[in-house]
Image 1 (cartoon, rainbow, N blue to C red):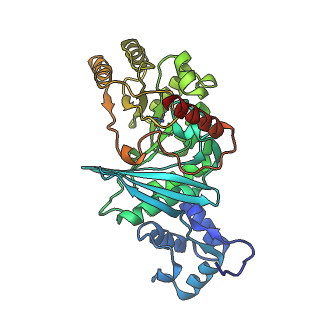
Image 2 (cartoon, rainbow, N blue to C red):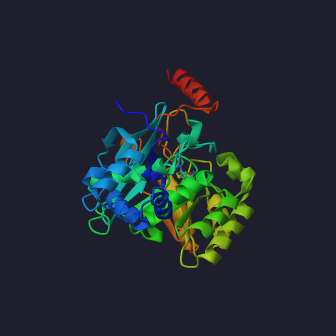
Length: 376
Ligand code: SAH
């Protein structure tokens, strides 16, 4: 691009929540209410060109064009699955791209948003983990995923909403990128942003206990916790951060959450892997644990395989029996239908293009090569 280099560099307005935007306008000598006018253009009209903001004066439009911009991630590829699921590959910088997924259902449309390029947690059954880690996404890169999808889908905030729910269940551990994720979720919730109610914005965590308490102070959103095993020995194998924050500590944090937010509930995610965590004894352990959190739900996810994984999806009858056992014990248990698996858009299949800074992607490639050798 043939652009004049400006100094200092232009500011991306997608990096600010409402307060941040007001402060920025004050800093450049403008009235803070102007920030709110512009915010509405950005998130309700999905406008990224100041020149089209007709109720903003000409002089201010010119000033804004000079000092800032509205920069959403670039769509490198978008793909539709046969079931209506849609996946975007979004370029974040020259070496990295992440994935965002839209899942339409009869009564709602859910956008699954990523928080990091890759993930540092290395859960043994997740393909993002196996891809290694590069960096945190900025606020603009997180809220920009919603902006790009909303624009593509023709979402109209407060009216014809195609995106009714956002889940921070894409690539990355959202609580490991706390400030940027909270700021982006504020924009999802804000009336001048995407205007979504607290129960429609969900953060999913592998269990970073100290950040959970901070989250409950910072913002009202719904919480999902990736449990996957109800005993420490097995959970540490599946979700290694369990070593640092074992189940008892995690549950205590969940109890504090529920006590502080009596009107919200927590969903525990439990991915079912054949012969690993899907047996009647595992269900019994889970039931015992759920007695400590009687208002919470369990969401069973059949394992989604990816190249190089050592796990398999549980048999359909084992999945059914597991669910029945929980339901019979009075635990509210849902089974997540697998969506978008023909475009690798299902849980744990998001991969993107990551310039890995860890050794993990090399290890995965080695396992894939070995698998190919065994198969041939
Ligand atoms: N790091 C966060 C956000 C990821 S959310 C977290 O751990 O919660 C994605 C959800 O899909 C998590 O519950 C994750 O454990 C689950 N998941 C990961 N890999 C999967 C796979 N291969 N099949 C099914 N679910 C998987």
